[in-house]
Amino acid sequence: MDKGENYEVKDLKLAEQGKKNIEWAEFQMKSLLKIKERLEKEKPLKNTKIGMALHVTKETAVLVKTLIAGGADVAICSCNPLSTQDDVAAALAEEGIKVYAYKGETKEDYYKFLNKVIEFKPQITIDDGCDLVSEIHSKHAELIKDMIGGAEETTTGVIRLKAMEKDNALKYPMVAVNESATKHLMDNVKGTGQSTIDGILRATNILIAGKNFVVCGYGDCGRGVAKRAKGMDANVIVTEVDAFRALQAAMDGFRVMPIKEASEIGDIFVTITGNKNIIDIEHMQLMKDGTILANSGHFDAEININGLKKIAKNQRKIRPFMDEFTLSNGKKILILGEARLINLAAAEGHPSTIMAMSFINQAFACEYLIQNKGKLEAKVYVLPKEKDDEIARLQLEAMNIKIDSMTPEQKKYSSSWKEGT
Image 1: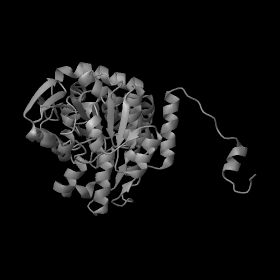
Image 2: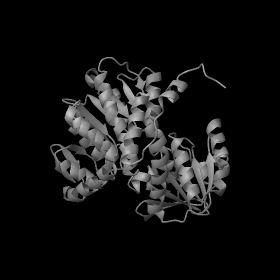
Image 3: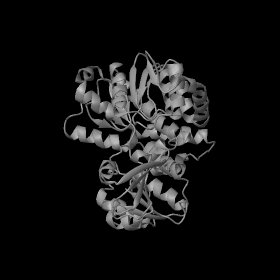
Image 4: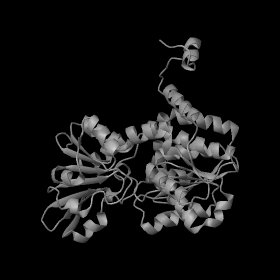
């Protein structure tokens, strides 16, 4: 480990490669760079301290640089023990940015780094999973009086924030970035779908075609994974607890059944619900020999890995991100990426183009909070629709795609009720 006053990373010698990877991300994130150019001129984030708990990837580095260009002082740690790209963390550290992250963090280091960001006394928090917000609310309430607000990246974190709001536990305003269409209908569907399959392939090099591929959860992320697995000629099965989502899956052409039934026939399972023990011990005991289990939800709670460790006769590491557990019945269960989010544990996360849209939302959220400082209640907010429209137009521009505009006649017609058949 390399440590300094404002950083703790795996190896500073990796910085050169990290810079190249950040450059490659920037090349694909032209829409976000447009926002960076504007922020650099206007400095709307001047004298604002932003504390971030995000996946420390090449794409996140571009967001960090965008916020700094806008005048912010930034400190960042990872939001998951296995999601840091060590070369990127080294590149940020070499540039003097406060960064505390390495791939494979112990639980102790994970929380130590969260607290390094908290010691920075941020005025705005940017979270992915809500651990930073939760830690501040539960152990550092003295910081809340100076908080402008925060932004949350992912579904799991928004679930936690809404629970906090319901319990009157939330003490400063939060923007649910995940609720923007240019986030959840792009990042969650397109990004998670591709990166989850990427992670499974890197971890296993398995053939997906012809396999029974079970997707546990058919929200935006699950829908994306199911579509990508179908595109690789898997026999896709969906398990759900929500009636409408189950109906959607059935109408999209997928088999839908309870997890107990799927457990007996599945070859590859992906949990992606944001909930706990979706695949439990009783399900594992029904599975075929050599069944592969992966999680693409934010936390490692979706597969009961702790219960599996207790009942397994034997455990061994087959490949860097594949652990084999032998059950008492002699069957083997293969767990990918320690049951942590497979797309970042074994792969590189979402493609840069997708993350450009998500991270423009984050930059807009910071601006929105500053513009409305002192006016917002301690509730969960969604960015205005016009911001979504702006992001979509920026991304279309980056992709060299032109669209039509309504004529004056069409605008009048669309806003009137008088003209009919």
